[in-house]
Length: 195
Length: 298
Image 1: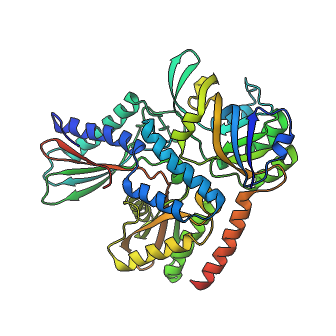
Image 2: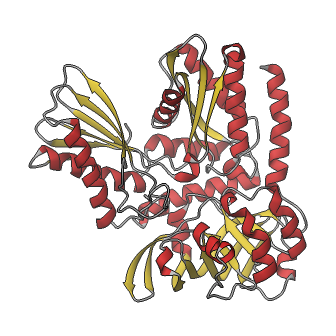
Image 3: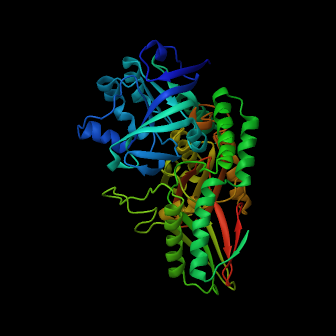
């Protein structure tokens, strides 16, 4: 398992292809916060997102913030939510908007493997609940759109040494979640036999 | 810490406000010990990465005076009310609600509570029937014990109920717990506390499962048969290899807590409620004179 540092948004797809399931990654640059209602607005209500998502790193989040002024927010506590609820948006995020990385906690089910392989995308696993640490790695909230969806807005954060993340699903068809679940189900059969 | 409030209503609301924020920032010692122990025995690379990040996060929350996890949860309180406590439970409820609201506005904390159909936010972590309060009434006593358990949604979404039939026996109970936790994978932020409620009725089994997750990590049910089931389930779950955050490893759960009730001869209910690794809780004792004693590890 290798360790990588990747800066987002990316322009060179080779940056994504070098990542393999299980690898450790630390992220620099800019990332975009997104959640359930944000994606429902884009895809189910057909509203164009007012931020450029090409080459982007999306984070499944709904931050605790304090309003400083029009469009200006101070971070209080920023953590990550369960990704599985939002798996159906993976394909259109990659195909229509060129998103290259989705980061959340708890993993994506197997239906994400094929589109991520085809479109050259990765899923990064963050440690759920480790929000105090994550907040220190977010340097600034640079932009907020769709404030009426608070806290499920579109957020643009500048990050430094964001991680450590684990590549949960890579762009080569590999998924740590699928492998762990397959082994666990084999183990369950063995356990059931001795109960 | 000991505080005397001017009247009982404000004593209870002060206790609620303090407990809610305290629980979110400062996790109990038994949980810290269990997480350190998990890091000591985890052999997988990804599992170690996750556990070391968790330990670092607990320290950063302390130094930055920040919340351990951003999910301020749904506020749940467990109250033990003495029969001679001078404040009626109706007033206790109003004070707990007021305290929850005040903590949310003053800190400020993220407001999570929404109308279940419209999904519109209902206010500062309060709403219709929120916070959720569970009651026990104690004879021959004049005190009030309040335990606050802010319950995160990632783990609460991993709740399961099965009405096993009596012929499924204890094996049916064990299989259901195993398949539920393996199926949950990384979603409930493992390694955490698995709460299991058995017996009673459908609703009561789930109530018991929730009560089980609010116990200090690793405490055992006083009934030796139930305690044995807790130990066995913990070992079996840790054989599955789901590991920290579902990324593979030796430590899938920190503990399994089982609470039981007698049941109908045709019933065999089993409920599972998961509590994430950030198993937040904090307690207070409010005396009849309004003095408050806070206790993190109860």
